[in-house]
Image (cartoon, rainbow, N blue to C red; front, side, top):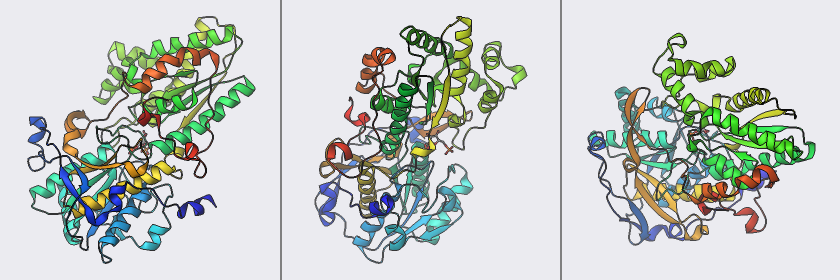
Length: 514
Ligand code: FBP
């Protein structure tokens, strides 16, 4: 019933995008990029940043645009498709929106589906990427680029819109460069998607999906905190998705105020974290509390120096028998099941599969051992949880529904104005949607060379938690109190209808502090 109701929600959009025939693009600055990147992007390294302003733009004609989702789902993706579809139709009723099925593999294997108004209408404001599917296919082999070129030529596409995170927009930048090098006019336009919140820049204030995912997790964390407070018998160790960056854990911490939130970027060692947890449990026991809530970002493993060192040795091909003494000591402390998870292959983009590593269980195991060593006389019963997949395909919040629709319109504008190699950015997101601004950032300006699978590759740099930023500073200022005095917040479910203070709440990551 709710899904059906949501079909008729009309997203709020920036005023500027409402004046379709009176918008044009104004170039802002061109930022010089590092010389090692210039040689990788000889045709696209000097694109300017730009923004939409009132003025006379290009004449709208009929366009043929390809679109694909890439990477993990994030709530709101279908609204990007809906807005693209609507805007292209507005340009000319014979425009076509062609979906590449299952992500970039659909592009290189020429698996397509023309999107119709019935398909679009049935997916407005709905979660998931199921209308056209997604994948983590990495574009880096010459034969993949030439296959993509054949596909866009065959379908005579004016543009390809890639809806994805840092790795997918890296794909986009490479594709834009390749098409330019082949004198192929097809534009490549990116949309910032990922629940992780780590694809950011001055103009890209947040990626879509982050708000819906954090609100979904925060509801469950609040419920668990209420259970902890009611039953008073468990410590809940909750791992949260987010890859390397701890944005999701930090955002959920500010929403729910658990007893302890670990932030990967603090780079604490595994054994100091175990000791901190054991201290917390002892102190709470002394005041009669044998329960609590702990948030753990999944990317913590990548920051703990001992595990980082171990992962580096393992990924450089070292066999268990030939690990250095330092790495072996860490490895031996880890239960066998988790040792196996550390040995998992990296994803196609060279990222460790941190969502598959049960760091929450490892911490429970080591804390138990530590408490035994300390001859702890209280009770320590722990429950482990992992919140990840359930937050990626929920119904988008009003914010994500509006934001995604606006991003889709911005992509259509980029098509009309002939931009390529850019990521669409909607900024001033703290304000009401009417006041949002529309900008375009060349993807290469967010890139650097990074070691992936042992080789230097051009990639969009992940934005990590800023340890001097207001959100983290706020957490630091309050964590000692939250540790012992139970200040849990219980946010409850996402609200779609009702007063704006319930339905329009922005993520703290935008507000900067609660
Ligand atoms: P994207 O970067 O593609 O948006 O994916 C985000 C994410 O949900 C991470 O938080 C998580 O580590 C990963 O996907 C899980 O990947 P998979 O879906 O392949 O298990």
